[in-house]
Length: 401
Image (tube, rainbow, N blue to C red):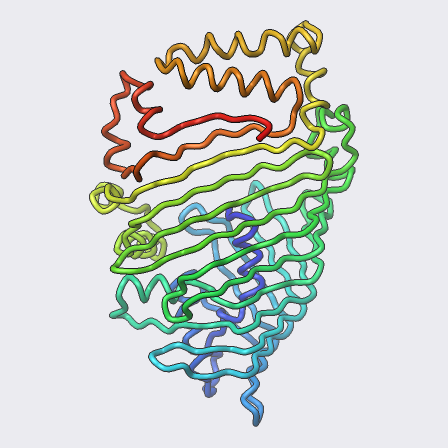
């Protein structure tokens, strides 16, 4: 199943899906670039009722329809937009087009397969300073990557709904920002999904055991956000990204990663496989990926009452009271960590667990090697010496910091 934020981008940026109708019609070059990119990315043949270009260059597309069938394990996606309006279109040269303002009215995406499906209904969406890059059959891996990217200074939606299993989930809106080089797509980016609300009726269907209700949650409310920076140079890509998911009166999970030296040629191979409906040839890709390096990986939980709600229940499941469970948790963790052969790491982890359980605020694990470590070096670490691997990877655990 595609990640939710990717599905929202499909909805928000569906202007890339303009295809030539059966009748002959002049299509602006920017629209043609969007058509070509959609054909490359999705392999679907979009259609629309009509396309009109005003005297000032504003393009209006009515009843845009995209039907992407199930392919290579991905669910089918049926998208409709009542009207797309693009204005202030400018040719920046070398196949790059800027669309100053784009609006999407009456959007709906139905996605899924025989086992699971859902429908997203988004009345309105918009994009500001949207940069579209054309790529021909002889495009370099860098050009192919850029053409597949939806780059806009700002993309946003109003409130929308998600209908799943006969229930309706609502969200206050989605926003994505970007600032950087329109030619390569490199730059800083951010994303926010605001107040995804799961009502009590939907929660009951998802949590048939009633555990969440026992914990005091009649409904759930989530915010999602990410920030990062992408660099593209010399045939490779670097990415530094942080992602967070927070639940009201629950807590927040935060994930961070920093990688460098991702070859554009490997990306091109992944895209080629996707277009052909086949799995990538990892044997061919692995030599290219061995030089990818990592200098940060982190996972952190920040509590906002979830732990305090959980501990009595967990203690009861183990046949003990909460105080006893807290008192014995560190010792149990120490026994399990002994096999890692790194006493300093074991002591640090046990101390963090004890500190967190006594006064839950935050707990996290991170890997920050003294020098960046490559995929090749990771694969060469000795599995019989896990303590040495922990030291090389710079793994640490902390709590309430």
